Image (tube, rainbow over all chains, first blue to last red; front, side, top):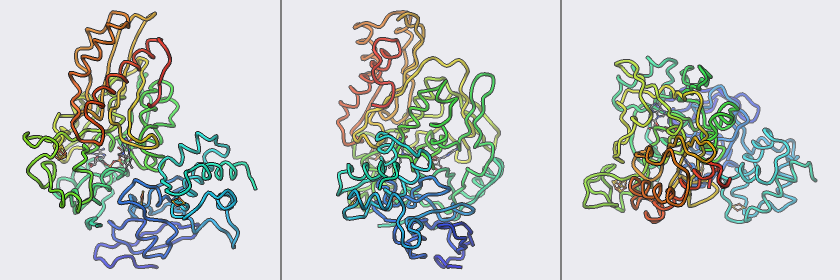
Amino acid sequence: MERDQRSPRAKIRAFRLNGRAREILVADSRLLIDTLRETLGLTGTKHGCDGGECGACTVLIDGRPRLACLTRTEECEGHDVETIEGFAEQGRMSRLQRAFHERLGTQCGYCTPGMILAAEGLLRRDPAPDAAAIRAALAGNLCRCTGYVKIIEAVADAARGVP
Amino acid sequence: MEILPRFDVLRPASLAAAIEARRRCAASRFIAGGTDLMVNLRHGLGAPETLIDLRHIAELRLLSKENGGITIGAAVTLAELAANPAIGCDYPAIAAAARAVGAPAHREAATLGGNLCLDTRCLFYNRSAWWREANGFCLKHQGETCHVAPTGKRCHAAYSGDLAPALLVYDATIEIAGRAGTRRIPLADLYAEDGAAHLRLAPDEVLVRIHLPAAPWPAAYAKARARGAIDFPQAGVAVALRAEAGWITGLRVAFTGTNARPFLLAGVAALENTRIDAAWRDRLTKLVQKQVSPMRTTLLAAQYRRRVASALAQRLAAALAGMGAENHGSV
Ligand SMILES: Cc1cc2nc3c(=O)[nH]c(=O)nc-3n(C[C@H](O)[C@H](O)[C@H](O)COP(=O)(O)OP(=O)(O)OC[C@H]3O[C@@H](n4cnc5c(N)ncnc54)[C@H](O)[C@@H]3O)c2cc1C
Ligand code: SF4
Ligand code: FES
Ligand code: FES
């Protein structure tokens, strides 16, 4: 069991993280993004703004996109949390990761984990989205490098099973 | 600068327990999705010792059809509202308004109650603690003067929730529970025209549910925003209009983003029992421009927000009266 913030108020919270059961001792006011990055060392989830504006911290909770910078770790109790670290299996990238790589959907890479998690949330709900649906799903994710076109193409490719 | 305060979270399973918890701890706050309050707490706007999470109260999560109308629990999420077939079919302005809030990750967490009880917004308020300290605090929080209207004595921060106008034109009523019991009021009566105190809600009162009457008039919602992808409304307008062959028999118009409260346009009776023509549009424009009062609380000019509010109202009314099908969704 990890210890997250020594605090008299810390409580033990159990949840699933990338398919594994975890228990951590965590203060109620601790944000999920800080637990992930600082306590668990899962730095794939990025911190890009001071609250809710950029989407870099997007994770999936019960398969749906949520912002780790506005979510308390405490809220995850009993739920299923997925981060980018859960996506490559035995060194093999997921379809979205491969498509972002092939289509140059990633440049500096800072927005990429959030983009991939938001796109994954979309594809689980709608396996064959059109361009408008992809844009709507990624509306909350800022990218300062790619100009978005390559990202949208990458998500469309992943949905079609290319490559 | 990260100054999220240390707090405990309570998860009451009943309304009574939530109200009692709020009464026992003066430094507590209700919270639902947290997409408004958590941002504000991270900005140092308030430092509660306890947050009371309302989402574990089962009755707040119900959405049910009754007597032809619909009742929506305050903790129903905007993602659920946007996807609900009964809402989409009978109350399309609500579905459109829900879809126009933030991005999918916001809507998964955001609740209808949180949207209706949203804090008001201003260029000088929705800022980090260091920004506000460097600039000088303002009337709404920790300071003495308003930077928008320094000679005045009140706050003009704008209520900017998208759902309220859509609910207002469907004639929604709300149920509020507190220590003294339950009261049911028209949604419009929840609000006051004061950016620093826009909710007529006692500290221990919870918004429980929202009732929508049966047989809704055709209605639509549109908002103008600075950034198309996601953004709060610079002006948001809902119109409900009943017409027979172009002859208007009923009209309701409501606004958000322009005033400290969302409100129903007063005096619309003068625009009923007539046809939409150029003169009608002028009268609607005059009425809107007299009642909206945007101030310099966003990056866009107040005059633009005033004009776009009346333009959207006209456009929606014309579309609903069957005079050109422009813009039923968001603008
Ligand atoms: C980047 C970004 C973009 C956004 N864009 C939009 C937008 O376009 N349009 C829009 O309308 N909003 C927008 N929002 C604001 C917010 O996401 C929504 O308004 C949301 O619906 C708020 O609901 P919540 O459940 O998260 O509220 P919370 O943050 O949980 O609560 C908000 C306030 O309401 C009170 N409250 C909550 N529920 C109740 C209840 N049942 N009874 C009494 N008080 C209650 C809380 O105490 C708190 O003061 C945006 C937010 C972000 C971060
Ligand atoms: S309108 Fe004035 S008092 Fe209100 S938040 Fe803005 S600057 Fe502060
Ligand atoms: S860090 Fe920017 S939205 Fe979470
Ligand atoms: S690749 Fe650099 S921010 Fe998107």
